Image (cartoon, rainbow, N blue to C red; front, side, top):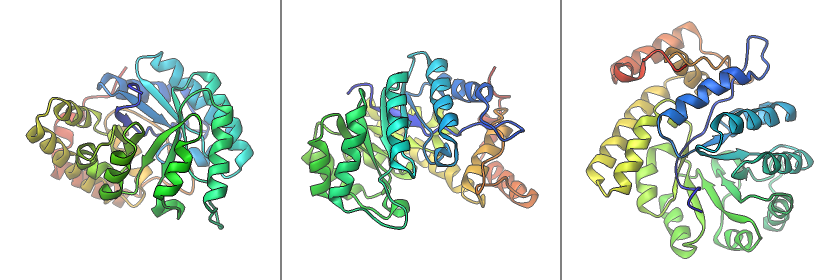
Length: 303
């Protein structure tokens, strides 16, 4: 599982002026991440607006990223969808296309499935995948929390290797990593990456990584070399910038606006996400200037 560790930006998805997925912009955005030294990419998750894309667009996005990275970094494809047959189809496609692993939200909408239904759901995904499967634990959005018994049952399924944990609950994460030392657990709450690593997480998957992959790479490298003062400094710096980011009324809109300022055009967010108003854009710009974000980040983008 050495490929499933380190810093994995949760990439945004790129849309052209016609609102359709734009592979050329996606390639430029991917190069920005890879050139910063990240270990992997997480594609078509929440930050990537995967649930708002058509199945064809999601497949095209995965294929574009895989072709662009060409084996240089690990690629995890998020394949969760509102309809389970679509999830299964996306899982098979990502596996066949060459993704290194896949991840999926639990099946929830108005009704919350019990543990039997969740095990059946993830088993159906694992059965069609030739690559490792990660559960996506984000109770504040899905309404479903990972329990010790559920995690045990899921890890007994062939091909299920762990989870992306966005609960932000370091106590529980530490318990899971301690009890199931061989499982793969990525921290999904950006602000507590360092504490999560100290609790046993194998790395992080985060939305803000797209804006400052260099800072998170430095955090990871410092942690790996046991330079905890440097790692703490990088976590603090990342959190300072993230606090500035959350003044944006729409998180995806804020991230895409910031990337555009860096010369990396990603297009507009897909509804119900939205672009920022002129007032919100000014507020975000001022917030970023206040924390010195542009001192090193505004470099004219990538080729």
